Each structure stands twice: as C-alpha cells, then as structure tokens.
Amino acid sequence: MGRAYQNRKVSMAKTADAKAKVYSKYGREIYVTAKSGGIDPAGNLALRGLIDRAKKDQVPTHVIEKAIDKAKGSGGEDFSPARYEGFGPGGCMVMIDCLTDNPNRTFGDVRQCFTKTKCKIGNQGSVSHMFDHAAILALSHDDEEAVLEALLLADVDVTDIESGEGKVTLFAPHTEYFKAKQALIDAFGEIEFDVDEIQFLPQGSTPVTGDDVEMFEKFMDMLNDLDDVQNIYHDADVESTE
Image 1 (tube, rainbow, N blue to C red):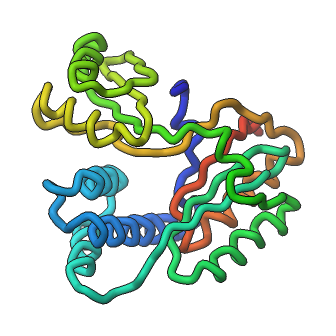
Image 2 (cartoon, rainbow, N blue to C red):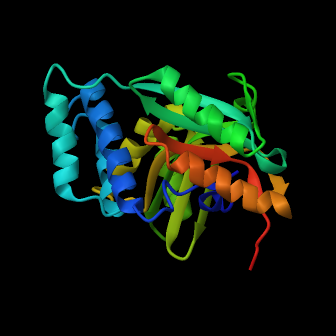
C-alpha cells in the first residue's frame, strides 16, 4: 500500500509566495488542533506531531507560538473542516481537505477550480471509498522485525511495513495513529520521526497523460492558491514532461 506514497502527495504550494502560504496553512491547522485538543503538546499528540512536521517544513517558531497563543483564548476564529471530492484531469480521483470559516465561500472557490479546468466536483463519498485513511510513521532504524514486534506487543493493527537505507516506515489505519506512535516511543525512547502524519492513500492509480498533464498542473496550482485548502490527495500517475 505504501510504495512511493510521498510521490502522490501534492505540495502545499508551488507559487512564488509558497513559504507564506505554507506558514499560513500550518498556523491555521495548529490553531484548530490546539483549540480542540489542548495547547500542551505533551498531552496532545496530534499537536505534537503537527509541530514536528511544521519544523521540518521550516516554519518559524514565532508562527507556531502565535497559533498556540491564539488558541489559549476563548474567542478567535471558528474554523471547521470541509472535504470536497471529484474527478480531475484525465479522470483522476481527487480529495481536497479544507479548514474554513465560511463553507459557502470555500465550496464556491473549490468548485470554480474544477469548472475552470473542465473537471467535475462530486458528491460526498464519490471517490473517498477508493482511498485508505492511513497513519504513516517513519523512523531511523535498521531492524524492521524489532519495530514490528514493538507494535504487535502494543496490539497495533499494522497494515504494511517497509524498510531500507536505515529507515523503517509503517502504515496503519488512521485510528491507530496515537497507539502506534506511543508504542514506538515506549519501545525506543524519544524519536525524531522522518514522517509523522495521517493522510489518504489511493488504492490504485489513474494515468494522466498528454494535454491532461498541463491541465492537471493548472488544477493543482489553483487549489493550492486557495487559503482554505489544507491538503490535496489524488490517484494521478502523471506522465513526466521531461
């Protein structure tokens, strides 16, 4: 299930102001996660993992701290999650996760991305059944068996595990994320995970070739330009133009 999963994950932004967009997206997600689960990373593993990912993506400390400080108050913005599904260029399947304070605006913006690239937005559930909601954890370790044993002893439901070049990557249902992460920390001490996230992995792939490649890139750029878009998942196997 996990082969080359990183190649399927679309970067948050590829425009000239990419860093600012990445900071904004992380800031919003950290704020929502801290507000809902507590501002202490030690007691909020989701927040802890998010902060670790933000640091790996070179998000400045002041951006992270500002988002957490904002979550301490009782007021603030009221963001809610929204997910949109549909079919992109070449018939590929696409899922877009957003955090929004205005669902009507966000839906209109996302729908316009589909419309302007001659794609079709679908109903809820139209493509999500073709993705696995997975927890992914990767760590530096040279003994796959020891990692697997630690997870099995903690009764973690592991769906796939890979190893190579001194790293072990495990895949589990998203509901097992906290249990899996804690099991590894208990077994091996404090770990700096190379990958620590929950995402949707496609069960298959759809080839995107010819003129659809340029349209696919335009579609992704339009979605990434939307402030409310947090993550994009797709099953496109895009033909190289090099």
